[in-house]
Image (tube, rainbow, N blue to C red; front, top):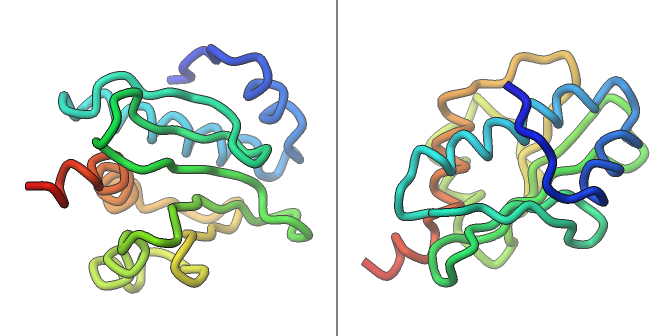
Length: 138
């Protein structure tokens, strides 16, 4: 189910994506928002632009870290989900899901348009990012 955009600039970015990655990125967006809505401690999620990329973060401070999504520059059929590179998130994802994802250093999960997204592992990764600071504090 497509969640309406609250930010016209974010909506414009999605409309500008090449058709090959637009639909997968919309699916990723929906999964991020759905996952956030399933975690009461996350509360409201802000959808905004950071570095020109759609970004998602809990509105309450010290809960989670920002998740950004974008088409991969120079690769028309690839898109990525970016996490703060100074967290342990991507290394944790790599340990938990070594075959489910393609990793880019300590900052991103990279996907090929048209390939199947492992929904449950992906939602688990999103949940870990959205609760990163809260979980580290407890």
